[in-house]
Length: 220
Image (tube, rainbow, N blue to C red; front, side, top):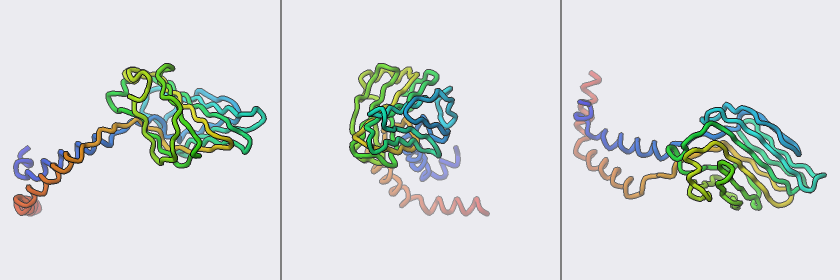
């Protein structure tokens, strides 16, 4: 660690990198690259490789309403697509099963990457079959976060083995989602970032020349 002693300016830089790295950490649930589709029915389970959860399988269901309408769930090329024809107010369901995991040790909520969605659409999540985040409107956001604390039994995420995603909307609604992740919202407080930045500025004023000289010596 002598190089740190010689270059103290790097210490707060490393601290900032660690803090921001932790804030951006995420667990990939499904990258939606493994193709799967169903029209007015259920298909699966299929083993999914684009995930960080062990032995994850996926079952998808499309329920049209009325029965003679069409609702389709199509997963391909990194997107989950849900499509309804002009007569359908159908619902869609994606069910995941996987080896038990303490997801709270790595994240504190789910992050939905929304490429397109009708404003009428609502989402429901069910963890381990019993812990529920009730239907909520997504409001057209490009990113939508659902914290574990918003579920009826947050403790389910200490030993999570399954997750169900249900989506519904008004007549002829459609939606398109990008990769599903579990992420941490523990972004540093603005005051923390300010102090780190201030420290960098102060160190930079007094140590910049020394760092440059050290770098020049190493280059010789």
